[in-house]
Length: 468
Image 1 (cartoon, rainbow, N blue to C red):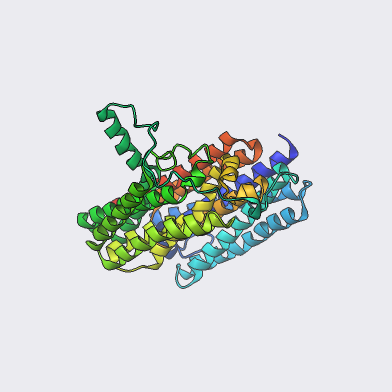
Image 2 (image 1 turned 90 degrees about the horizontal axis):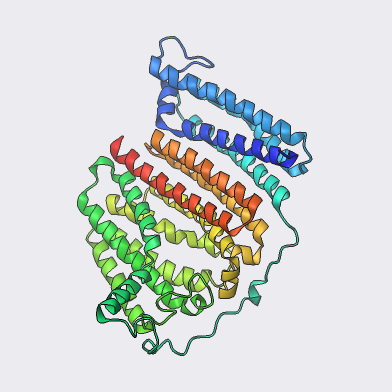
């Protein structure tokens, strides 16, 4: 193992270990144990045995993690790492005794007041410092200072296609097929307009929000109408996206076969289809409540107009700001159950928002040249691949931090804690491999790891909310 690889491995191990400690500390069972085990470093006499075991297990784990952090910082300080890496790692180590002191105060106070929040905050700060040190270390280890970037002004939009207003040309994909085959192909083309690959994940976001808000009292009627309205809204948004990006889609190999771009579906028919889905979605959401319907309308408008027309073709921050489109289903699901938007609902929406760049930047790396041909100022095109990889890691750290805050704000328990820790470690491993391999396959691997992380965390939230 080379010296730089050793530093990266130690920093990654320390980052994951601290995150495990933070997530476990955010669960309700640790808070209950703190109230029952009031002594420090050992529990006071008379503490219940289960609470004492949980509390002492957490403290022993903290001691072990402290040794891992000490080892990571020692390796880093003895290496040829830059001053900023050594300083940031040193900050993490310096905060660890502070965290121990806050933990002792938490135990002696029985977990009351603002001390639990302070304990979580210091833990997240240690995690954040280690993650930033890891990001800088990977940048120094694998980055390049001479990679090509582009000025966004140099990306020219494609010229409009004069055939858009016409019916499909005689040589199109449907022309020479039997009637049954043409009908099946046409139906599948309309199905593709709805972007079904996005649909399952966004519906899962709404389902997790409903489960978290409603718990075991969740009504079947609310589930059916909310998810039904969500499917229609996502389909409408996807259809409008196909319509508005049709000229750019023709330039990109990944999207050149889309139904509107290839005239499999005439432009006017696609527009009518999108409008019909949008109207139906609002009508279905209204069966739940007005707030859900209003948020559904905002979601369609944001993705179709703000993201597709304004953000995506004009700013390198399109993915970051556009994360609001994916976050809105969480607010819709929460509003469908409660009729309002609460802090926990906002935290779940925040999780989706910060996950989006960590997720989508991988796809932008894999298809960098495609996005450049399409005229989109994606992060790898404008800022370069080294910067993009660093941002993926930083946004991943933000995602994991928000997940721990969500656990702390709600009654989510061990299943969600274990899922975010294990899948977060897998996601981190995939991102580290992306830094080292710098290939399309590595970017797609990290992309799929991000999907697995969020999908399984959302499923864990549903199960935790309904079963425990």
